[in-house]
Figure: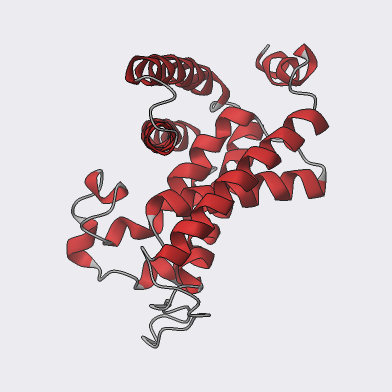
Length: 241
């Protein structure tokens, strides 16, 4: 599955799970879901996330341990072990947030440009650039806020859960492709539903449906947890006092 669709699937799963379980999360933390939804492809030299960790793809073959149950266990275990090292974990989470926010900005930019092309330039290029500039400015403000929130233990636990959700969502996305994944690694046999090929027209259509699903789920999330009120945001800000 392509990176952009991995992100769309992971965010849709996150919002849907939050709504179903009636458990809100701090909206800017979606940056961590974005990062984790890309992380298993760190072993692919052409992936977005491998640009930040170029040595990993030289050590592991693509769709190997990172795409397995063992990989999920190692990732989850490492995160929970780091909970006892407040300063180290906080710095790691800040780096993760920065990477997640940067890719989220790229994703929004790509989607806006696709919409511009599909609508025969209904929105001008200047308007697209202005929207992207404003969006990235808001993300930068969120990153500053995250720098304060991450130091609180409650938020670190919430972030860890979101990271694990994003990671698992990536594996599920590749599980349904024809290439499959070695779910029981080190057994190298690849399992999967084999529904479509990565980059195919079928995936493009599924990617479109995921974008629509995300828009609808964000709408439901916003209304269910009343993000338009100051109370939602105050519940996080007050904990910092």
